[in-house]
Length: 287
Image 1: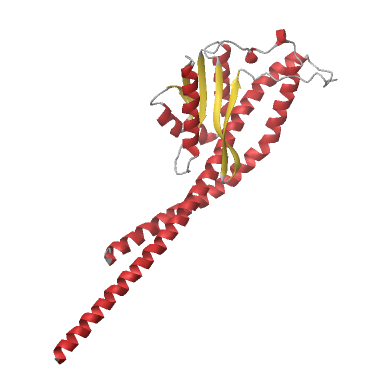
Image 2 (image 1 turned 120 degrees about the horizontal axis):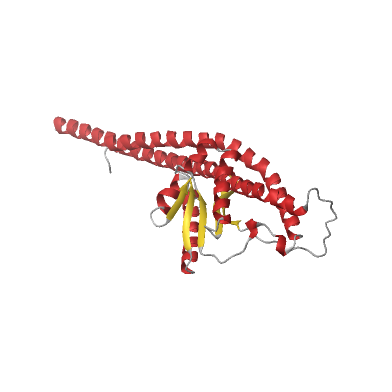
């Protein structure tokens, strides 16, 4: 059994760790509330914008399709991998990296070139070892606004329109609740064609033309899609870290209690031995 000094040192160390994890949990909980409110307020707008765009696109003739919907042979692929800048958030980052690696290997198996645009230092640090990184946008978290994300989305759209890349996918964590994050893979470009329902008649008057409305909506929809993905990931990060730190605090508490029990047993055994030595010495003197 370890001596009393060693156990006291371990108790002190575990208690310090418990204070750190408890503080990190409270910080993440505070940040989660703001991030959750932001993504919850944004989803209805983003979903309605996508629904409107799909409804209009489905009624367009094939010849009047958008340049962002052009289907061509896929030779070059960019995967936008969204992680966090910091760790200590459970499997949040590793799940994204695993999905990104699997996706990249699938494309490479088809003879297609794969590169990454990373959002988050964790993705950049690990993926840069095996893949080309076209851009590292980790600083976006320092000022996460729609305007700043729009710049990233515009650069991706330019690469697709110019023919530099033939397909772009986004991998991120979708926020469900503090304990659950869903790994999502969404095609960013080209726009996924939606099958129109011939039974649905859109009896609308368009001003200006339907084609012009769609052409103006598509860039805005793509920017919103990327912004929503980053916002989802941002909220998921704080939820995952809060949950991870909560579990770490509970584990540290259990370990501290177990160490205190061991310390009390060791201390009791030491006191008992001292009493036995005293009694034994007294009896020896009497004899």
